[in-house]
Length: 418
Ligand SMILES: Nc1ncnc2c1ncn2[C@@H]1O[C@H](COP(=O)(O)OP(=O)(O)OP(=O)(O)O)[C@@H](O)[C@H]1O
Ligand SMILES: [Mg+2]
Image 1: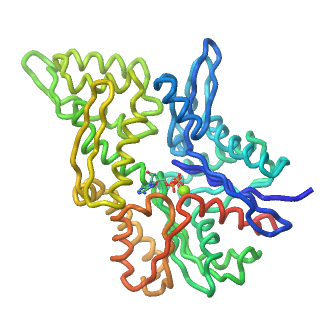
Image 2: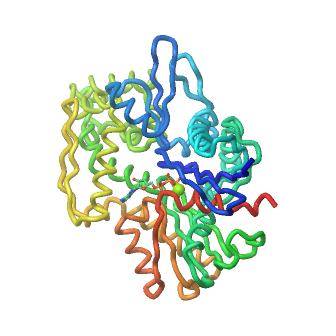
Image 3: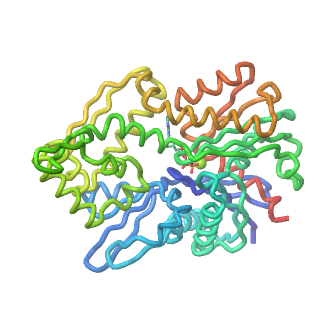
């Protein structure tokens, strides 16, 4: 029977699996799915749909049920135990299992057998520098892989995976800075690549530095929602806190609709009671009513889809329109690239500062880098490309395989089993 290794990139936005054929010594296929889940209930029975099917099903069900995105961000949350959906409870491991299992089943079907050997990617830091949370996230991911039917499992940093994929395109030795900018994290590695060494055992000494920061495309979308979205949902509206005393509605209400890890669980009775009370105290403000409509009709996904669309359009244009119109909620804004860059400026500055400290920490000067490899969906953002061009004015910048380079490179990391 043929023998295979799966390279599995469990991503915040997209997950991918590359199938490495050990006899042919090459990747024979790569599969990619959106990292989303949709739970629908039929009487007492709850079913979970995964990936593109989840999106279609959720939309065709009129956005009833529970839709979940960015599950990877839940993995390091020690405060998250489980979430109840219908009569079932799901842990973070259970949620990740659905996605890994789906990928494994799709891949097993392609190769006509069950492969239980896998290299799983992980960001350099799942969360900021908290090692306990980081260990928790890796453990949950490991358990998810086991529950999905994998047995022989190794971990590899995602940017090292991306580096090994990039190495396949090289014709000579290079010291490369790989930056993998995803939905949840931005990961870096500096690595000495050598096409002659591709797939060989001794790669550990080639890895010069690894680092990362907990910022990605989701952070940009959150910043956009805060800046351009939340004013339509009541941010800045006042309520009567006592006789004749007016205060702005609490900002925490709006922070909840800016990030997926909060939005995934933003349906508790206490929050609903608070919102109903503030609605009354704001004299039934129509903007704040939009927030109630958003929650009651589960519109988070469709609003964020428009936010992402706006971002993607601005990866190629200098101006576009952010438009959302559903359930009597109308969001409509003309937005220039310059304004967009201003909205994400805080996130850009954090990435920029982190990159400076990363190079400093390892005492590497920009001129010591032969080339840069940018990958991950967020590397397509114009301001991100400008950031690298400014910092490394003389260094060639390459990019490619934005959504599958990590999975491919993980599949090329078979040396980890030896
Ligand atoms: N053309 C584009 N322009 C700007 N951003 C984009 C574009 N296409 C996708 N993105 C963004 O890229 C991100 C997804 O990229 P990717 O699939 O590399 O992330 P991921 O691997 O799932 O996340 P992570 O590695 O952080 O866990 C999303 O935030 C998405 O909105
Ligand atoms: Mg990624």
